[in-house]
Length: 382
Image 1: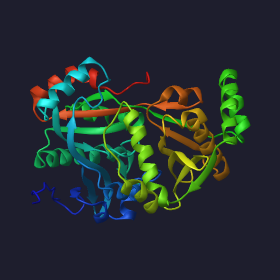
Image 2 (image 1 turned 90 degrees about the horizontal axis):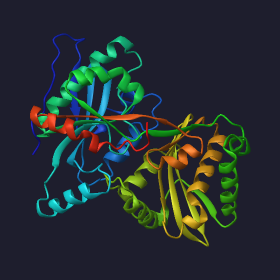
Image 3 (image 1 turned 30 degrees about the horizontal axis):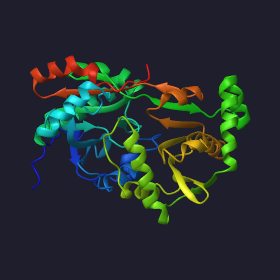
């Protein structure tokens, strides 16, 4: 049964109207993408996420409409959120898990969050005709409606996921004034492809790293690389690699589905592909990439941890992706979040991301502020 949803009503034809939608299809491809120009993870990507049947998540989309035009927009997800999700493995996290075995709801809150659990960052979308000085007004309107929606959906915790440093600089004071606390998120790693050849790129690395990479690249002699725009019969093997990789990861939030992987390639046709890495006809790694003409994003690198590592498959995928960028004139390779040591060693830069949160209960919000340093996922020394 659907709950009654909050609505904003205009007093004149030009006043902003806030609306919530249960599917991005209700907004439309062109209206959504007009607000997210330059974003690789656009309408098609979010539609693939929506239709992926990811367990535990509900999807909403908020738009601010002015004079018949969508002027601002953001996706929203709802889910149960365990506060120890971002805790480092240690005594505290183990203690919480032991308590949760007896009390499953311990430190778990119903969360409403602006952004998407499956995109690299949380972008705020504005129509290009919106003047810069009006963006804060529209974002405040969107934020107010989001808070009403969270209350209607009985979400005690509100969040805003992975806001990049430039957006935090623009709206951080507004969020602070609204009572949101901030914690460091995982930064985004990226590399400008402003070199002409892989040899030019290698020349920029330290002598030790360059020597190490040349040694690792010899593994190409034993590995067959295949680029595909569909998974075909290999999807079960890809999912096995994904779960093997996910189980080795310290950070686990959403669990992706076969429909997600197939949906990205289907909905983002011409702007996505998967690279398979075979040794003696056995699939040992797969790498999902999404891109536009300017940026390539490494979404997931999945590998058999035991059998794939001797072949240096992570590093082979890095150079495979750089070559793709060079061949297609793509100027930036974005390698995502976490595992920064190798990425920085290979020349990547980091853009800080911030997560904002607010509990509807002021007392609990004060407690969350006190413990928030323990919940930060900022592992890269931003």
